[in-house]
Length: 473
Ligand code: GLY
Ligand code: MN
Image (spheres, rainbow, N blue to C red):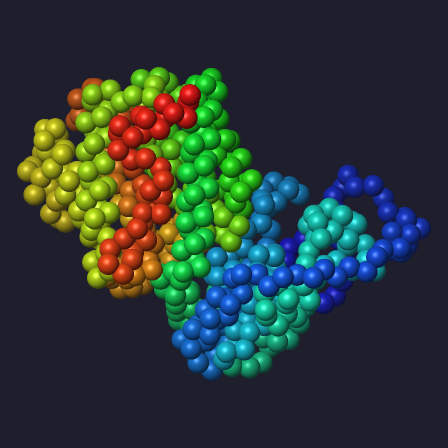
């Protein structure tokens, strides 16, 4: 069943192999259940979400803004992916339940939500997505209201609520059902998407705490992985993926993105998430992994480790080059600096390093010219992106507010330069082929510079070796 906005009761979502439910069974199931009302404490996000809604309403005075959470996505047949709400929806409401829709109208906000299944229909024991006996109890509408500090109404009231009234903008592409309620108007809806992205560029103190916690759990996940090194050597990349995932699920909400575990030449594939390869002593392994915490803020951290516990001289030289590039990049992060300052600083180091290796077809300064960029054959990607509830946060922000803008206190961005020598690259010496190195940290812009939220994981080559040795015992 897709997301429902109608008040009419529909058949529960069942499967062809579910046993028959004769009337006597159904009638019996509907009787004899205790009243349920839980005391729900106010969620810590509630006052922050209220302040965000107030700012959002100020940006669109007199208008109505519709931000859906989204619904389940099919993985295969009757099996869905685990639900993860839309970032903007949760940012402005705190809600993490499926099918809810936040409506902000001139300072007044209502969350239209799907309630707990009634015990007076079959839904609670037959419906695989919404039934309490299949999927777990949803919060009741009063519980949602108590927890979020929001007025909450039944989602079936949404179509009528949107039928008349002021100019309405919809955060589109999240909910097909909500998108279908109102004709799309890119000229107004795109602006809403832009503003909700740009409002998230600067993090408040509570958000920074969430990101720090995500980084701290991520550190534990990296440590877990190294502690498992014997089994990593036995089973390969997926043992790291699984080990990190266990930590993410146990202490956070999930991983913030599919873990990238690149042993050997897999490290040269930027988003290597197949993770099917072996982990081979003597090679490097690139780990790009981040925990998404319970409030949905995610870390995004990369370390490149020597599988045997010690870098070879060649690996160390290349690693130090990337580390220097990253350090210069981090040093460039401060309020008022251009967003691209970290990238430019890191690429300057790497281009000169590539020239020193004799790889560039032109002098480094010529390669760094925006019209050339030939060095990027071996650096491939941008050095930074915003980080928050989305790993690539604030993605709909206008370039003038993001990539072409200056950094401000409270922004959090990654600094993650890399060097990648593809296994089939005939323009590099054979001993470089198949080596990929990236180092990535999560950097908060402070009043007078920056703070590395992921500094608990070592970066210097000697520190990495000491850390691996200590954890492997
Ligand atoms: N962590 C993956 C990326 O930043 O694209
Ligand atoms: Mn990243």
